[in-house]
Image (cartoon, rainbow, N blue to C red; front, side):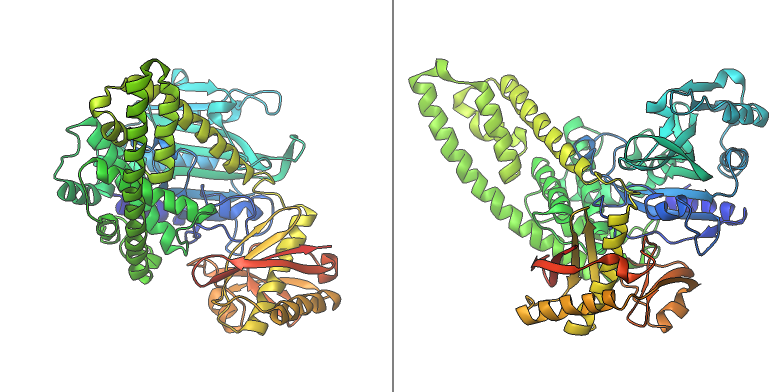
Length: 586
C-alpha cells in the first residue's frame, strides 16, 4: 500500500465517522509568534483545541505537512525526516477515549489488515500532575488486547505537549506492532499555563497522530523508510547521478538519505513562499540545501543536482503530484531557487578549498618545527569551522589536510564532534527560544498585537496598493514584526501615512466581529485570504468596521480601542520582493 492509498483510506474512514476533511495548512504558521514551521498536525488547530468553535464542526480529519528541525543532525538513519506528512483526526470537545481507541483499532485491523495479535499498547502511568490512565487500559481490554500487552509508561513516553512552554496537553495511548509505533491517540485534558500548572480544559479533546512515512514503510514491509515507494523515485535519481548504489555502503547510504530528505524538504518550504537567507526560516532552508550539496560531493556528484532531484519530488505520482497544488503552481520558482542557491554555495566551497590549503601550509610549518605543540583539539575546532563556514564535511577536511602530514584522524574526529555538539546545543537553545511564549500563548498582549496585524495589513494596501500581501509575522510581548510583498523601501511619508491610518482605525473604537461562512462567500465579500495555500469550505472571517475583513483563526480583541497607540519603529528588507515592518503598541 503506497502513501497515496494510505492517506485516501484514512480520510475516507474518518469522513465515514462524521469528520469534516480540512486542508493541510501552510508550513509557515499563520500569525504564530512562537515557531518557525508547523511541526505537528495540531499546531494550526490550537485556538480550537482551547475552545474556539471551528466553522466545520467538532470532528475534523486531514493530512498535515510538517517540518521539524530539532533532529536535523539525526537525518541519515532509517527513520528521521525533516519534512513529513501527519495523518490526524480531532475531536473538539466531542467524543473522547472510548470512540478514539475503538476507531483506531478498527482502522488498523480492518482497513489496514494488520494482525491484532501482534499489537502492544501503552498508557500513561500517572504522576503528580495527572492520574494513571486506567480508563484507556480498560477500553483496550474490552476491545480485546490481553492485559499483558498493555504497558504503563511515564510522561517521557506517554504524554504529549504542550508544543511550547504553555498550551493544550495530556496523556496519550500508543499502538505498536513488532516494536514499531503505528498510532498515537492523544487525550488533551489540560492546558499548561505560564507558571507550569496543569489546568483541566473545559472540554477535553482528542488529537490523533500517524506518520505517513513510517506507516507506509511498515505496510510495504520495510524497516528502512527510504526503501518505501515514497522515496524510491528520489533515491533512484541520486543513484543515477552519483553512479553509486543505495544500501551497499553505510556512508554512501547515509549521504543519499540526507540528500533525499533535505531536497524534498526544500521543495516544500520554497513552495510555501520561503527563500534562502541567513535568518530564521530562510536560514533553515539554506542549511538544508547546503547539507544536501555537501553530501552530494561526498558521493561524487560534482555538478549541480538539487533541481534534478527536486524534479523527482514534483513528479512523484505515488504521493505528491496532483495533491499539493502549491508544488505545481510554484514549480519554476522551486527549480530556479535551488539552482541559484547551489551556484552560490559551490563558489563558497571553492573559496573554502583555498582557505584549507592555506591552513594546511601553516599546519605543515608547525609540524616541521615543533610537532609536540600540535593540539588535535584545535585542529578539530578548525575542522568544524570549515564545516560551518564553507560546508566541508569532516571527511573532506581530513582528506584535504592529512596527506603527508600524517595526523591522527581519530583525535581530530573527537574534537570535531565536541565542537559540533556544543554548536548543536546552542542551536537547540535558540530554537527553544522560538517557543518562549508557548504556541498557545493567547495572552492579552499577544492578542492585541495579532489584532493590530489586520489593521496594518489593510493600511499598507491602501497606501501602497493592492499588490501588498502578508507573507508572515512574528509577535513577542514587546513588539510585532510584519512581512509583506512590496519591492521598494517605504518612504518616510508612506511610513507616516500607514502609521496614522492604523491609529485612526484604533481611535474609531470599532467592534471586532466574527462570522463563519463558505470560503467562496468570504472571497466575494472582499475578505483578505492570502496567507497559506488552501482553505476549508467554511472559514472564519474577522471584521473591524468597514475597514478590515480577513480570514483568520485568532486571537483578537473585542474592540480596536483596546489596542492603544500604534507606532512603526523601523523597516527592512525581508528577501526578494518583500519588506518587513517592526511596530509596537503603547
